[in-house]
Image (cartoon, rainbow, N blue to C red; front, side, top):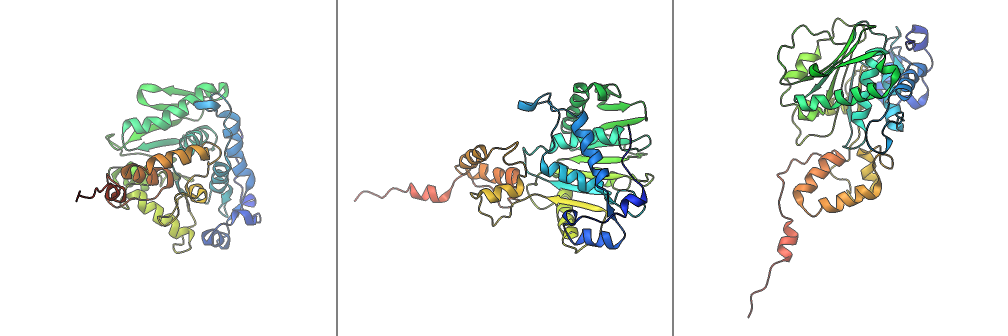
Length: 335
């Protein structure tokens, strides 16, 4: 299988304006970075050619990337340093529930295992516990089983939660915060699923510098918002937004945050779109409206809805009653 272009010549092409999104991109150009659309397209083509859906109405069909998923992959793999290597070494992607982030991450895992051109790749799927760690692993495994081409190259070692590629000595390992002995790691990629659920930053810290021996490592996380503004997930959200604003000159970090603001009108479909780039595709507006209407009847459910479906942090303590409705039930004493 051919590898994507990584020549210095490719990286020095003029950057089309559509890929210049923020001050960090402008700084990258000043540093000599360029954009190679063929490198990003290679990843998209791999996923849409070899990866299949495993659930719902699209089960067994070839995966069709949504616009926001394609955009993410094009940016992550298309931007190149002056020497032709990937510009981005870390990514943070925050998107609300039910937008297809698990499917995207599962397909990305398979690309990194067999098509990224890395020697003896080690891809770690990190999560808060073993059951969460299996979610992406199991989806990637189902994609392998559904594709004759992938199945011919990749073997699942189910009891160890591993995917193995003999042709390049590559391995995918489902990992968790409760897994012992993480010394001596040499990951080519470390990926965190639902970063907000990490009980501490211990696992994050283990992988932060573990890829030092790799020429072109990548680390990343995909998550919904957490319950409060503490933890490594919020650190990564704030870091991403400061990088994008030009406040931190880190051109190796790709931060994409789909979220509504606490001041936004939650009844406005434009607010829904801020956190749900798949609205109208994997999420139907009428279903979203119905769930919102139901959530508004119970304050604790509304807090959960805001966090999981709009990526709004609900810092205040959840209330079990809407006090305005409670007060409206007040009965006057008989004369």
